[in-house]
Length: 343
Image 1 (spheres, rainbow, N blue to C red):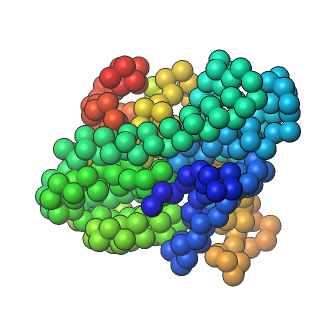
Image 2 (tube, rainbow, N blue to C red):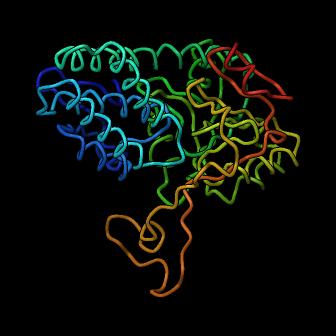
Image 3 (cartoon, rainbow, N blue to C red):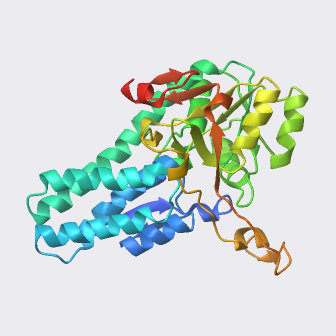
């Protein structure tokens, strides 16, 4: 079951609506770029690798829905669409990477409007297929770091729902379990939208991998009690200095370091950003209502008039990272991003 894919039957982008999980597994279809942007902004689709593929499919969709009858006109349309898509989530690099990869290819090979449409779709589908292969290779590499009997803490959701399939952090766990290791997972609920309790727990339950959900603030105590012996998370962007990931990741890295617990980051090469530095990265701030109100019932959780800061990501310094797991292999400190990319 793919999280996101192209539907040839009606030339749409089909995806799981992750806002409905775990209560309902429902697929929705985006038939234009505005619907793609809405799905990304409202986290119907999320997770760095999945967003990269979504961006690529969004470009293909823009080419299919363009009314331009010249190469210049169609390229103008898909570039405008690409910029709109990239602005929806500024911190995760995979989204802009997916958009830019397809646009660069069609700029070189798109000699007419039909070719632009066909090439953009073929390349986006290829990227989706490659995502699965990359994650399985990454998972196989990372499984070497896990042992039978490990209790692994993870944060947010870095599983198949964050990718086309298999997953990054959860892909490592899946690969280890597939090799016969008995692994138990502890998933932080990951406030305020509970991607850990809603999505990670749902995924692992589907795979019959033992999982317990904890409140975010319980992680340090469980580390001190010796319950957790490894931490593995995903990433939305990795620079030379920092790992950018779901808010709360930095705190877990500090706790893991304090308790002598390995802290692993699992991410594909497409998440690496060696050219950017801290001052270049915008940390996304999401709607205050995600904190002010609880659930679909919108029960008030914060008094009106009280300011809210709802940061979606934080940054973990490289000195807190025990290893970065990619499809190219496992890299231990000192970690040089350029060397990882070169393999």
